[in-house]
Image 1: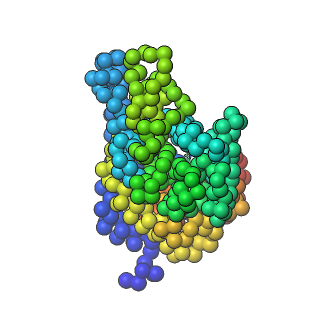
Image 2: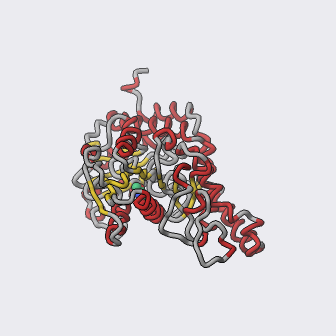
Image 3: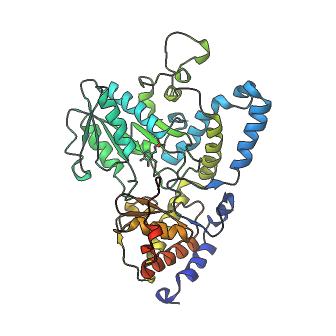
Length: 412
Ligand SMILES: *Cc1c(COP(=O)(O)O)cnc(C)c1O
């Protein structure tokens, strides 16, 4: 049959029948009649998570009490989960740890990088990077420790002068989904004598990253997006092994001490990646994160990436089939973007609300971007066909102009 005249729904059914990841949808809890296109902001709930959290609370906490730090392996959780994340980002197991939030991990690693480049104070990033990334540099600047420099992405390489201690960028742009060239930028920074910190929040679990291959120094990433760790899940931090012995991070809490239970007055950092820890780890949050990480690792990032590209490509085909005309701000080529598609429209907010009213949950990003995320672990091609049809109907009917869709909630 000529694909041009086949309805998107029929093609979707064919793709779903041939999809090797189709079975994984049943490993998640998703509401009926919802097409969830916001897994890049808060990943869906794995089916195994409630039972795991309940067991942790009732048996390990309630029954084991403080003994569970040893008997239930609470002490090892941060490192164990880090090791499980490592293959998703091309790192060695001893180079990654799950701890704190992405923001806090940024602070620790920017601080560590500045200490490794005495005489240089500039942290270089780009305008429009995720806000917390820019704010964390500003916080160190207010302490007199850093100097923030922002350069448009086309100008980053020329902004790498002898004052730059650290180049800090987000691999997949949160708003547009555009990818940075990690290989070229890491090399350029190293040639300028600077270190590199990659924020992998919108990459991890959706597309392969090779931190070892690109020779990265540091990285951070988020636990509650594609890793499905739950709201506010602990994040992760990566430090290349070659930097670990000399690394001095500024949040020298007791859990990063070489011997926390020696209760010494003086700080001595743990020998390896454990030095990145600060205070007592959030065990409840780590337990939920571990379920998500195990599931994503089981599927494997190569297969996830393949499906993510297929999903977003098919979604664009569906829009074409419905003759939808809306400006794409993400790169049109699937190998130049992360697992999302962003569209620009003056009334993107109201369109987003109208879609949510129809059960298609995407999100809006200021000032005019409708952002749709394609979490490959649990979305189907049928979801793509349905979402595209809804978007076409919302746009052609003009229903997004109804007043209730333009009223802004405090948190969007
Ligand atoms: C989601 C995200 C964060 C989140 O930081 P939190 O400390 O978890 O709030 C940071 N950076 C980027 C690029 C993100 O996309």
